[in-house]
Image (cartoon, rainbow, N blue to C red; front, side):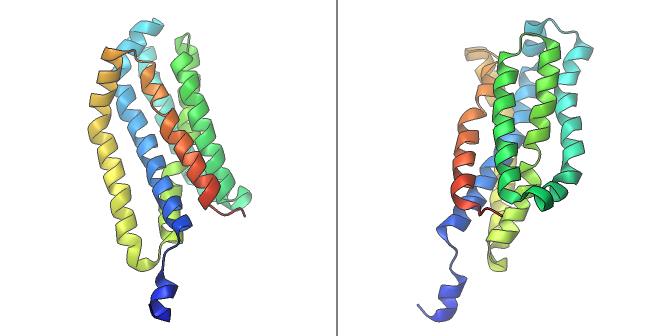
Length: 194
């Protein structure tokens, strides 16, 4: 291998960071679709009206919209690793809170915080792809991002409906825990402290 090829080599840590970010994108994208598929069951179980139930999705989306523009500022103040670890941890914790919600008020509160914590994952996925991969691999990184997003959108409704039918709507939120823990491990190992 010549020196130029050695300089272009992509480290294992970089690939783990990029693939971890793709898992984060998948997780955040899937959440919206599995929840929407199970919304009637969630509303019925919590005794919510149609209007109250619509806030389950709205709270999540509004929190996302608020957090996306401040993600860059959060990274500049706290660092990429801390923001990713905090965002992922919060997303997992509030996924579990959603699954345990005893009433509609708790569910709406937990969904808003789940959306706020989870939304940092998507813009930071782009940043990790651009920052960790050389320019010749950016297209591959973006393709991985696109595949994760498309699979989440396509599989989410069917998976949400299946989990709700077989077990309970509460399992749609437990679904976020394994990839969340995997993402925490990937970030902890691969993303440098700042």
